[in-house]
Amino acid sequence: MALLDAGVATVYATAGIAAGVRDDPRVRTLVLDVTDDASVAAAAAAAPDVTVLVNNAGVLHFGGVLDGDLDCIGQDLATNYLGLLRVSRAFAPVLERNRPATLVNVLTLIALAPAPPMAGYSASKAAAHSATQALRAELRDRGVHVLGAYPGGIDMLAGMEAAKAAPELVAARIVAAVAAGESIVFPDDASAGAGSVYLTDPVELEAMLAA
Image (cartoon, rainbow, N blue to C red; front, side, top):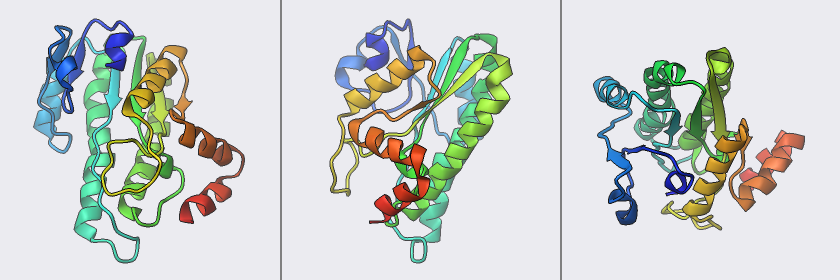
């Protein structure tokens, strides 16, 4: 909805389409499995006019770094890191053809310092954070800007008891950051406060999240 409110001509949506958005003639649905090469290639071919790509697919398994199920950790990495790479690689030529363009990676605050009960998820998002930095460097001279978004808890996460931001607020702030040409955004009040800690003292954020 935030993209539609911003006046975009076409939104290609692959999941989580609200009823009010689904009926908007500007919304086109695509089938996309970010863990499957053929599915990703088909999506890139079906959306040749994309100027803003939002990588937002994700899975989360609970478990510590010492006792978490390794298969679950592998699933987190396959979707949250390798899936992001797969989609970014497939769409990079599309974005470059349509430049100026923007690639948005929706990460998480715990990409910057881990939450111990979500060790696999944290690690996968940390890898995605590193990939975001690498993509920014590789695409800078190709007319594609890269934005990393680092929200805290969003009110769509089950199994986590904590203050959570409304997804509409997070989406609106990310869209505003795209329009402003920002490279990093902490799109809710909790992540903004923690993000300021990270920018001045990363070890302090690590201690905060470990607690």
